[in-house]
Length: 265
Image 1 (cartoon, rainbow, N blue to C red):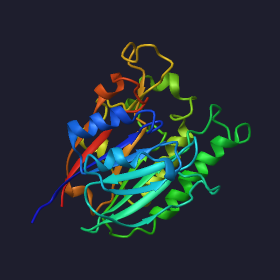
Image 2 (cartoon, one colour):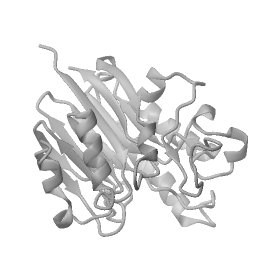
Image 3 (cartoon, rainbow, N blue to C red):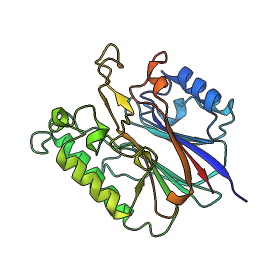
């Protein structure tokens, strides 16, 4: 029997501050599972009741006060949750679960990396590259499992993933060294980039627009920082992929938009 399963990833940039748009999105789209990044709240203060009222009664949290934080909210049971410290300093940037059908779901918030793309001048940039390297080592041991890796990777890898490849080559998130590091991660498990599987390059595909622009639609200076990657065993089960640009114009929006993939398992 084939089961349809829809999974959303969204860097919400403070779940309590934006709970109204999260509730609106869940009512309108009704995904089975929602993965959030940058929740910015400790587990004890997470707004569980709002999600439970909408049927998301299976909740796995890895929170941190005022910074970072990830969460998985689900209508279907979740098992075997873990929290990997790819940052190597205790920051809340990963949570992983397993579903009844055996699918592994890994939700990650990769560090932004600061403003200077040099690990000597900017230690945060080095931490970002090291984070991705640790993910690469982890990926090598996954074997033939059905795994979905989602989250804010804070890297826009392709030329068509940014509004101007030439102008952003020296801007953190699109520098050659970040792209090369992400490519090594991708190769470590032959991950399938579902966004570009369904929306092939060079077609425009963005998930983030800076708050610095008063009107994010003017100039359309977007980047594709949010991703869903499927392991080779899972990728053939993906049926569709969607980005929700309209959410960027909602009241008190995140600078990121939700992305959704539907699977038939």
